[in-house]
Image (cartoon, rainbow, N blue to C red; front, side):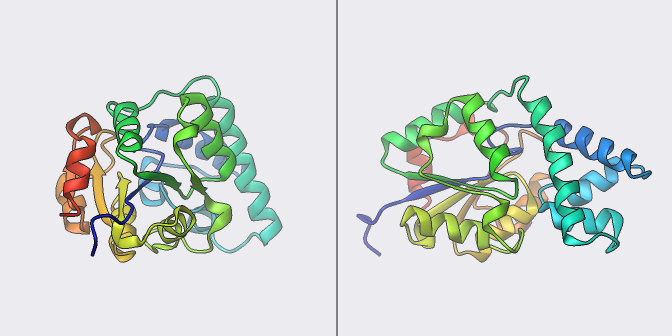
Length: 224
């Protein structure tokens, strides 16, 4: 394959660009409380990173129709956005690497299980929205990670072959999705949601504690 073909970086958001896990946890706690249910750390660990319909069915079973699921999901996300709007910071090394990849002519996009409104809010608050030519959220997909749909759609929107894409992820299911899509994958442990061993077993090409360890050159080298 010609090295003149374009390269792309596709970013997960929560746990990779930013760490807003606690905001999600508190939002799910409140929604669960309103429904008369408890929401534990184990519940959160088992569902984090999945699409809202899947999370709601896991937590509450099949007792809600589609309209009710949509309303519950929006209630949870509205709670999350209120808290996120108070301030969100990029994780260490993110801004420099995003900028360096841009300078190295990587196309960049977002591939996330989160709703588009969440993604646009985070990108706006952190000032990095101009770097991303494609933003794929939950509204754009029918299947959640580890299915590769979200990353394949991002690659399609960026106009770059999957084999020329690298995915930045923090979760096992996200790493599995990247590999299933035929993409390289860098796993970031900064948020601490998964062990290095589990991320490597899922298929990550590189596992780092923070993105400060990486440069555009090290990412280019993944492609030989």
